[in-house]
Length: 112
Image (cartoon, rainbow, N blue to C red):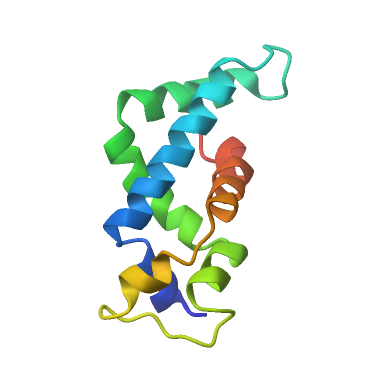
């Protein structure tokens, strides 16, 4: 697993679309969370940014999600496969939805 693998994974269009879906799920959940949740106003502010510009934010967030240890581990089969253009789509498809969601949720409060 390398920075090159993470960088290339972030460019895959299907991976970006999956990140976008997880981002919008999280944005909606944040919009409906209790106002007493820690950092709610900041979290809500970022949720609004994401809902107003999902395609722009997915590009930013895809780079962040691709650096998550579980995500890049899925894509590289625990570091045994180097990502290259010819295998990128197949390897990106190995990343589980659960790991994408966890990466998005885990980074949400630090992205605003």
